[in-house]
Length: 280
Image (tube, rainbow, N blue to C red):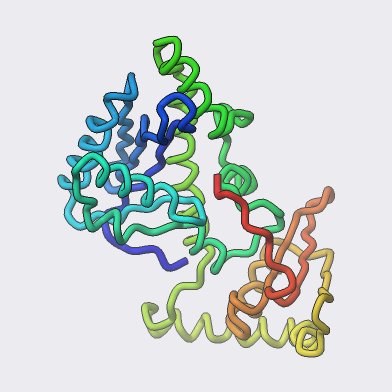
């Protein structure tokens, strides 16, 4: 997973729906600065404090040398809304926002998961992240802010802040998980390790040669299903196929069975692409 290697700032925003505020405003920005392992939340206790929230984010990014902003949506939602709201309030969008990274797109290109949804909550939950409020949605949080804060002038519930904090940490969890499963470029390895990995790759190609041969004659719309695998088998299988065909062509999905073994499905990505969700 090719993520920029600068100081990472994981960002997630909460907006209104525009029913009460007439337009969508940003009332909460969460930002986790990875090098410092610090999480910041900038909250608008009322809609007219939006500019203070955005200025706080600008100040944070200004303090970091060449930050890489990372968010998750599939449409660049967070960065796009932040840029639009900054300009609407007379501010310029910083370069770190304009060149930010949508981790959704990177994840889709580099990792195949045996789940149908690509929402952050689904992906993070699948790989082991535990949400404090798993049944709370972004829509509920947005509607709750408008009804409680905008209409009734009530304080923002703590669970709304926890929801935002969870999304930031879940995003970091997903990115680091995906990176740990991406092959290390061989030109960054020492010679001894290169030779060892070359031997492993040759062994794996030989072991999965029948599957590779079968894939070469696979008709569109069909898939190969393998069962009785170990997790190591699955990792080796994915490595072999992605090295030979690339993650843009081949899709390898896997799931754990009740007896602790693994089942894998191999198909052409063009006919097995998961339908994109809204990323949240």
